[in-house]
Length: 170
Ligand code: MG
Image 1: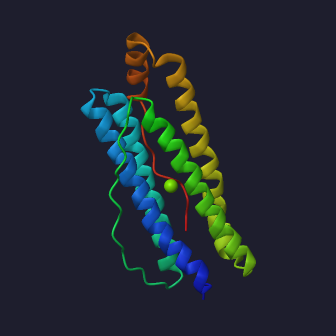
Image 2 (image 1 turned 90 degrees about the vertical axis):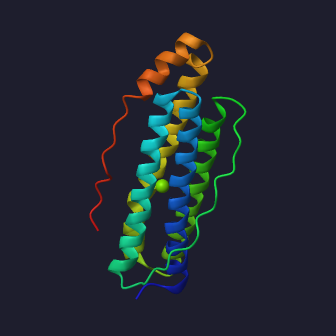
């Protein structure tokens, strides 16, 4: 039996990961509307990754005999002032998600729930990578994205991103 507080936080995380997917899909839509399909692709794949994160939390709960009822997902309501704005918003969002994962980890550790700690280890590492990817994208945009030619080439580059589902066995 998992600890009640840990279960509650894990359930909330299912919803938060689906919200992340929704937020990134909204960013993808923004770029596609602006004819920056490469940026759109990058965020579309980001959305798929977040969906997979949600499913991993869901599966972990189910594997531990926890029944999960799905809650409403918040509407993404951000308005972007320029092409760089979603990139900064994405980094800020990932830092927020890192804080959520850390909070679950802290709770699991406090009640000696080592199984959940081990499950979360993958996400601790993943968040490090997500923040790094996000910072790198901002650097590239700051260096190359401010003139039309650079932006065009960066968009082409981001269009090449492909996706492979997370390799985490539960
Ligand atoms: Mg995630």
